Structures are given as C-alpha cells and as structure tokens.
Image (tube, rainbow, N blue to C red; front, side, top):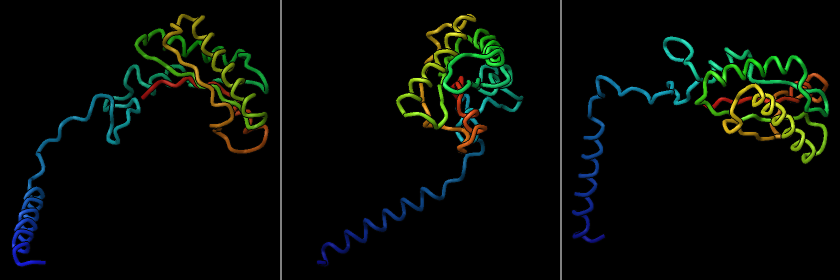
Length: 174
C-alpha cells in the first residue's frame, strides 16, 4: 500500500464505523406501529384476536362447521351421510361469508399409483365442491386441487392411517 492510499482508507473506515455506531444509538420508539390487519405476532393470521375468534377467519370456519375435513371409503369419492352433514355445516358458513374463497384439497392413502391417486383425489375434491355448490355456495369461489398420496396426515401403513388419509379438506386461507 502506498502512503497516499492509507489515509483515504483510514478516513473511509472511520466514517463508516461512525455511521454504523450512530445508527445503533437510536432509542426504540415508545410505541410500535400496529401489526398488519389479520396478522398476529408471527405474521400469520390464525383467526384469533384479543377478543376471540375473528368472524370470517379459518378459526371461525372450523368452529362453525365443526371440521374442515370429510373422509371417504377405499377407492371411493362418494359422500356418506356423515360427510354430507359436515359439508352442510360448511355450506352454511360459506353462504354466510360470501367474500371468502376456499380451496378444496383431495387426498388419498399411500396405496395405488401416483396417477391413480391424483385422479381419485380430484374426484374426491370435486365431490365435495359439487355438494357445496348444490347447497348454494358459488362454484367460482371454490378451487379444487388433488395431492393424491403426496400429503398424508398419518404416516402409518395400516388401515387406521389409510382411513385418515382418504379425505377432502376445505381450506379457508389465512
């Protein structure tokens, strides 16, 4: 290094250090700005606020409908009476909350090929969607997606686990 460059470098380093230390010396604001609407401390809206469940939220949906999930028999997309009762409760909530769009996910157990399970998952999701539409929910508010066997909730390879994975889930966004 030449002597001519050393003083400039030293000045720049000293100035940068002073700026960095100056930025750290600020006092924290006395009052933080409010969190964005529909968020909690971690930035995710779980449907809760200080007064309880927020109307129109995912938590409100699950509370009012009882569950977001209906189950199916092996190799079937037919809705049984229990599933229809659940979807009736979901339809009531969706009709009462017309601004909410949902995604209906179709799922399968681990048995069968990937292609077969994707098709069956889509039939399951469409079965739930069609039932909700028949109960007055605008079909344009519902999106269908099949995950086949790719997103199991139970990881076992037994009849109890398979039964939990054969499902359609109505997902209200955060």
